[in-house]
Length: 193
Image 1 (tube, one colour):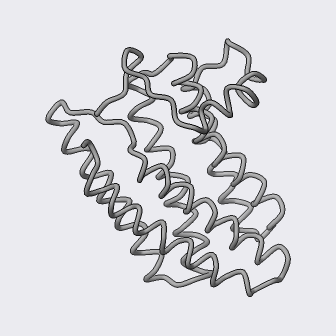
Image 2 (cartoon, rainbow, N blue to C red):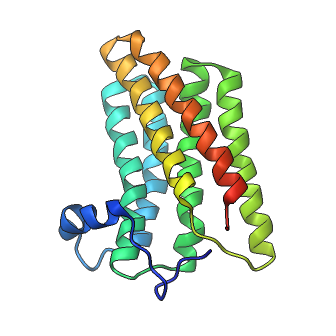
Image 3 (cartoon, helix red, strand yellow):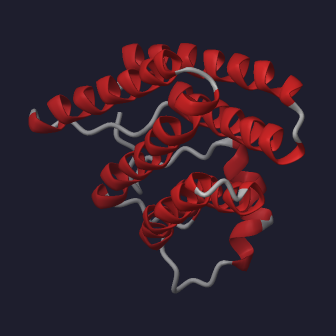
């Protein structure tokens, strides 16, 4: 179901953000601005991953990932949900996660594992495009939000393993990605319900 400004449902993290981070964001900054920032941060994240500057890559990645939580919460709390944001936000997510998986996870974990993650993301995008062509728009469901959270944790763990030289973290990252894959499949099967 498409969440609009008339049927807003706040998530637990929205209430926490409303009392903390969102208070620091000026009213002139709208959720769509934050989504655009994620699009702009992604190439920088990729660049620092490419040159293996792990501390800077970790910071850029975490800030870019945080914008995903902020833009949605900002839209719901301030009642600034737009159709553009509903479409652009998941594209920005897939742009960030998909490119990081192709560039970094494929190299650090396994090409087939990364391919499975990207394939499921493409299936989710394809499903959304088909529904949008039918005039059906939906907001992300809880499974999709959990999928993104576990993907972010997985990438962050891999980056910490590289940064600290602590390879024992890698299996935890792989496990986190496996959980993300499960949530991605459930999200795909329940999207729009």
